[in-house]
Image (tube, each protein chain N blue to C red):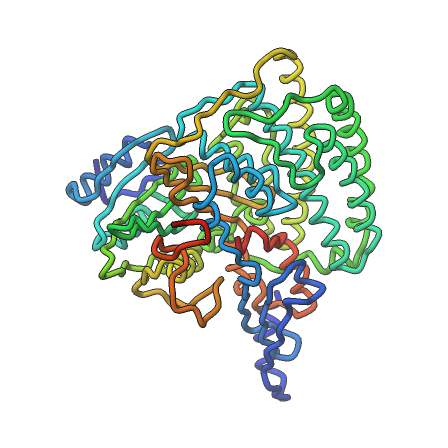
Length: 157
Length: 380
C-alpha cells in the first residue's frame, strides 16, 4: 500500500499493513479487534508514529495518555481515535526505570497536554518537549510519585 | 467578533490600562465546585486564562488497586454524582471485557435505559446551573423539579437516588420492578411536555440569547485537536457520538439521532444538550419496548469470577459530558493492578484558555458552564 497517501477511513487491516510497511516492522501490531488496533512501539519512534497516524491515517483526537508502573519498567499507553470510523489505536511504549524519558506528543494533539502532565506527576515519566511540564493535581511540594508501586497505601504490604 | 473588538480597541483607544489577573475560584458562584480559573484582563476583555484543578484529588485510581473488583462498583459511582450510572456501567463493562464475559440481552437494554435516565438527570442539573449562572432562578427551580421525577424513577429501579450502585460485573443487580415499568412511560410523556416550558423560558429571553450567541467560539478543527468531547464538541459541528459510531451494549439495535450544530458558540452547545434530552426520551421508550418483549423470566445477570486473568482491557462510552474511558491492567489476582479513568471534563477544562480568550469577563461564566464542570471526575 502507498504509505504516503492520506486515508480518511482506514480499516483495521489497512492500519496494520500501513504501520508495518511504513516503520519496517519496528511497530509491532499485537492484536486487532472490531474498531480496535493494539500496537507496541519502541520509545525512539513514538513521535514519528504519532505524527504518521495523525497526518496520514486521520486520527485526530487523543483520548488518553496513561502511565503504568510494571515494576521492571515503566509503560506509557496512548489511545488515539479516528472520528470518521470510530476506530481506536492503542500504542504501548515501554520505558526503562533508570531513564524515564519519552517524547511529548502534545505538539501534535494539544489535548494530550494535561494527560502528560498528570502522568508526569503521578509516575515521574518525563515528556521531552512538553511546553509546561508541571504538577497539576498534586501539590508542588511533593517530591515523590504517588502512583508508582513503590509508594504503598495503608493495607498494602 | 470579540477578537475584532480587541484589535479595534488597540488601534483607537489611547487610554492605556494595566493588565490585571483576576482569580475566579475556588469559592466562586460560577465555578460549581472547587476549581479556579485565573483570567488576565485588559479592561473587560480576557487576554489570557489558566485553569487550576486538583483540590479534590483523592487518588481514586490508586485506591482501586487496594480493593477487590466487586468493591469498586460503588466507588465508581462516587466519581461523579450526576453521572454515577455511566461510571459504574463503564467500570463493569471494562472488567467484563477483561473477563471475556457476555452480558444477558435484557441487562444490556436495562443498562441503556439506566444510562439515558442518568443522561437526562445530568443534563437537567446542568441546565439548572446555567439558569443560576445567568440569574434566572425559575429555570433552576423548574429543572430541579423535573429532575426529581427521574430521581424517583431511579428509586423505583434500584432504591437509590444519586449514587445508585446498580450495574454489576456480568449484568445488573436486579430486574426492573413493576413500579418502574408502570412509571417510566408516564415520566417520559410528562417530561417531553414539561421540557418545552423550560425551553420557552430560555429561548424567549433576550438575556440568555445575547449571553450565549456568539460567545466561546471555537473552530471544528481546534475543538477536535484540543480533545473536547461530548455535547460541547457536537455543538462545534463534529459529527461523532460513541453510542452511534462505536456502539456498546444494545445501542446499535436502537434507532436514534445524534444532534449536531455547526455554529460552535455557547448557544449551539446548549441546543445540542436540549436536543439530546428529547433523543434520550426516545431511546428510553424504545429500549423499554424491547425489555417488555424479552419477557419477565429472562436472565439479567450472569455469574462472574472474582479473579480477572492477566491482560489489559479498554472500554469507552458516551458519558453525559463526553467520552469516558477506562483502562484496566489485570495481573490474575482479585484486585486490579492498575485502573485508569479518562474523564471528559479533565480534557475539556484544559481547553479553557482558547475558549475564553477574547471574550468579555461577563461571558466567562456562561462559556465555562457549557462544558458542565464536575470536579469529582476531573480530579479523581
